[in-house]
Length: 65
Picture 1 (cartoon, rainbow, N blue to C red):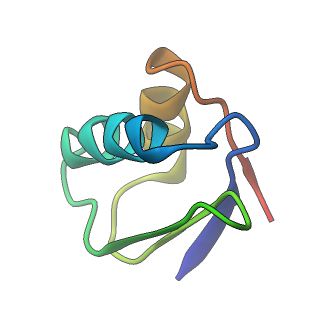
Picture 2 (cartoon, rainbow, N blue to C red):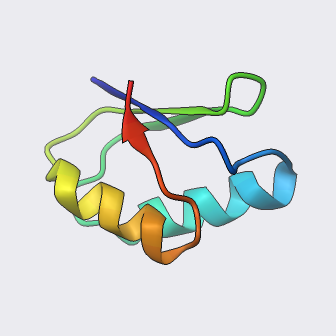
């Protein structure tokens, strides 16, 4: 399991955009988003570089917590 900080994610629209970006990543696995803490928790074999790149392209740069 990997937890990412996504500081620019602050509302329902942001959450939907992050979910959409992550759903396009092959092998993403389960995604759990917590708006209050602005974090995303992932499970699955998707390469972290692919996940971070997808979020960056969507306008939500992230870093591993």
